[in-house]
Length: 244
Image 1: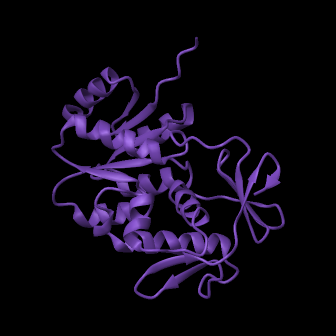
Image 2 (image 1 turned 90 degrees about the vertical axis):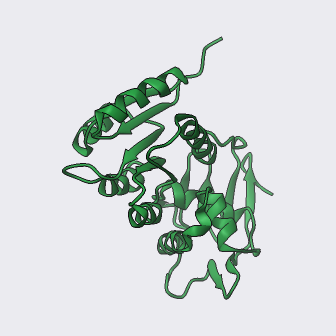
């Protein structure tokens, strides 16, 4: 029986005293770790292989971690966990707003980081089992969760990030239901997400720009005053080529 391929981690941190022992620990936990000591080295590594998740230090010389995080989320659709210092609260918020999945504060317990990695992967495409040929259809739009592909009524593929995908699935699984911000944040980002209400608002705004005709006057994703958000269209599940 063929063993499953190990989960590939890209670890980006300019501090060798942290990066190297952490890489060794993660390797002992069964992960395949690629190290990079800068954003430039990380970008070069991405040309050679595509990891399943990135661990990213915010404070680095040259291109900083937030800029690289934006690239990893938007261009590579890659789950990201930020490695931050205690005094970087603002940067953590910005990181979550641009699509990072989680963060850990230095110094951290390596076992906690492994738990965070596994939690993020469970929420990501790789670790989320999807029924074969199952999908969603709404007002001519279709979402294929297996391929993570969103197409508009004309059949054009609309790129979406990992966070946007999870947010859209949360709405499509609960059409016409009011979902408050805390619950949405827990679904999309988890862990202490209620501290960062703006993160879900910004993600909703980005998703609206992808699927709404007029994002300032949304039809699909409606704001419920004092409550959160509601997906206001009927949704059909597509299984084996038929709608359910």
